[in-house]
Length: 453
Image (cartoon, rainbow, N blue to C red):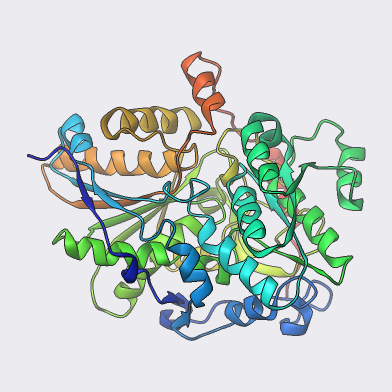
């Protein structure tokens, strides 16, 4: 038996369009609301922050959106990404399950994030934008936008969550190597950052706070737009190149997943793999179980409330309906910085709410244990975020072993952990612990949810 099987596509098989799951939903998404009036917003309301191309994609109901050829040309540097059959992992687990993983760590920045960073930077250049502001958690998104900005001649300013800024200096160095400016958030560069620091001088930060700072900076200049690395519909749509390729590669394997698994923070990585498969199910073509795995330290899907909330801490953004822990919630400083967001993508939230997607939460230590078990079998050290998907896949495979059943399991290995070695060093030396969130903080944050008629 071959230890490992790799399924590769030709570069001509890079998808020519992104998939928009909105076209296949039984019910339309809840409208985005203006925070002042409580009424649905229009394109003009979003124009100060986003390109018109991104806005039109955000509200589109078309099933497919053509990928611009300049974007596909850059995708060719690493796409199509490989799909692996994890034979060695199956043997190590002694499971009858068939385990597959789509590996996005082959991108220039080591994650799935460039799939949307390249697209958003392209649209900014086409519309004459000179500068982009953004936030980043673990640094994968900031790294990807820094890369994209250098390719399209754009200035990039990144607000990086303070705890990750301190934990992951090489991610910061990567961004700066490509010409981006990176600030620890909360910072004293914005009014929202100053307010947080005045109230909590030792704040570890959050994605909600970093978003507030980036949005505030973008709104102050006509030559600047804001780019988001997850959560919004158009961002999730850009990631569906992952799932579309995986569909074709599963055909090459003469197999089809019984269960699709992805880690979830804001939802882009999960949606990128899962949405094309869910679309098939919604159209009555082929059934599949889909599992979203989140950190127990920031469990928006499993412990949050499905309600309208702000996307940022300073309440500068429109209101979206999503699973949320409250925009004021600041999670503990665990190492999976890309999953430390108080809310979940509205489309992912809607699918969880209707039962199309299951949600499960895991603690930090058990995810690192799973990641190392995977690495010893497959030779790839996952990012802390990706460890959550690995843990979900291992649990599913062990369930197959206990039941004596063979199921096909597909998960997205959304990035490598080679810039996260401090986390693995902490784990090896017994310094990495589970960090429960404060229930009272969640209760206070949820009590402050905006009132929507």
